Length: 316
Image (cartoon, rainbow, N blue to C red):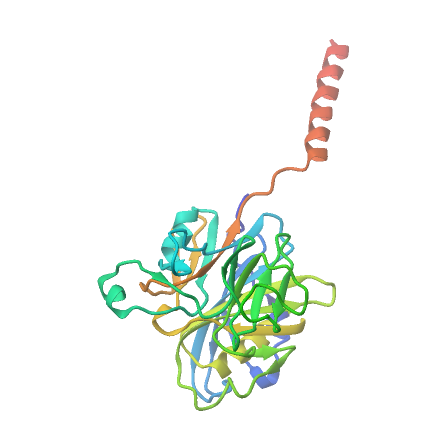
């Protein structure tokens, strides 16, 4: 079957919950191979902020065959960098293979056009690259980004060179999304306490994290909630990264722009995990396609067919 529609329990993950960030997975499914959808609920006693809240997350195994990514392309009409578009429309424009979508970079907001619902040209605050094509360069005080290479190797960049698409880490940018700030929310497992303060009010916020395992595999985690603080988001990423190493995470454009969708494999409808009807400057889509059979496998099948036909001819 193309899709894995059975619900999975993730017992090992639940049993490994750190006591300092006690949280509960209330729903977990694997609608596509290598892509898990989770709902996490947190009680006041378990919460880092002393209140109850919940969030949605999608966990992606980057080594899964058939998975790729796409970032919103540049504006081709000249002038400003991007043409605003709703995240849901961006995914549906790609087609049913776009199974997950989330809004990404901060952008220049035009309240008048938003009120009219009329798409408009805009500039992004941070870096953005789409399929190797530069969309928006690094800014002076926005050096951080997540890059996913053409072969799905993900890297957090914290040293982007202002005014261009280069970085001191020497990483060639392919699909890249940036954030509105100078630092990561979680940097090598350590929470940035300046960003994740107790005083920050809860709002709609999305975020993205990368967790490397000891075996070298990578998990990309997309997270969003209609009511969450950066401190709670950081704790959520730490919870979902249990058993992994080298956790890094950053927040994306929140508030009314927060848009997070997962496609139902049965109906092909793009359902909202956190919904927004706002036009946004950039989005990230997760593409899932059935991998082409290996040439050697096709050759083996052909050889078996010839063998059985020849055996039947000899028998007759």
